[in-house]
Image (tube, rainbow, N blue to C red):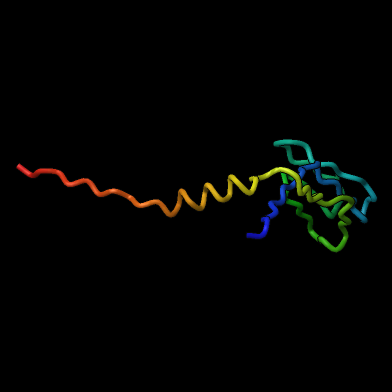
Length: 94
């Protein structure tokens, strides 16, 4: 069986630059951050919005970390567990 690779995302705050006002915006946890110009570029968690998204430049993206996840033994155990036979119980009806 070939080894399965599990990818994990390493979360960094999203950074964008508004071309209208040339202001750099960095996401804060749980808060909406805006640039304040007429384009109203805003970030909340992982959502970026603006009046004209062509005026927004992404400065960073999510990086992919291939370490972590389940090992091959754990994946094999999960497969065996999912194939187990389920016993049906019979009850007396009075």
